[in-house]
Length: 181
Image (cartoon, rainbow, N blue to C red; front, side, top):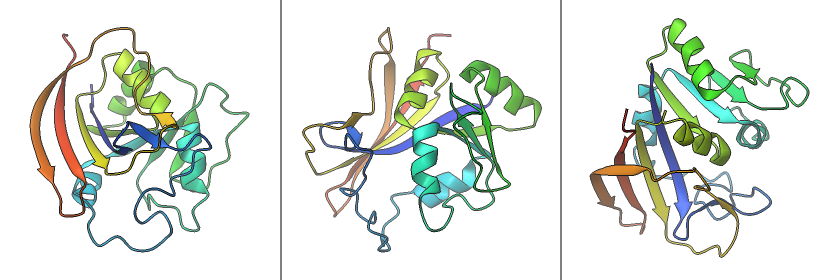
């Protein structure tokens, strides 16, 4: 089974976006170049394929330039194919379960999968498929919004790997997920 990783930023109070999906609180969200990438480029180069939820895909597709270049992207949606339009020849949609999708990706030779989007991350966690998480906490309190974590139905034990505090106030922690398998 491919290794599944999460690399995501949250507000200090655990939100990945405002209620309306807006990311205006993230530095660089206004299109300005962010000098520090917090390890994202290196992480991105290490993965074979991205698995995004539909809402995360729609947000990425709204950018003037497709942010994932030639990297293969799979969009998970229970409404697929009704609610799906590909913006790149590298993007495909599916309504497979996370486990079924990983079996397909493995058969294609994928070894490192980047999982993104709140509900998608939660479904992979629920199915014990996330192997590692890199969480970058941004020093802002939103008070409400779309939470990274929701009801998973069980405790998810993490093993702390490292934490880095950046001069910007960002704090990034890496964890391995104990899936008890």
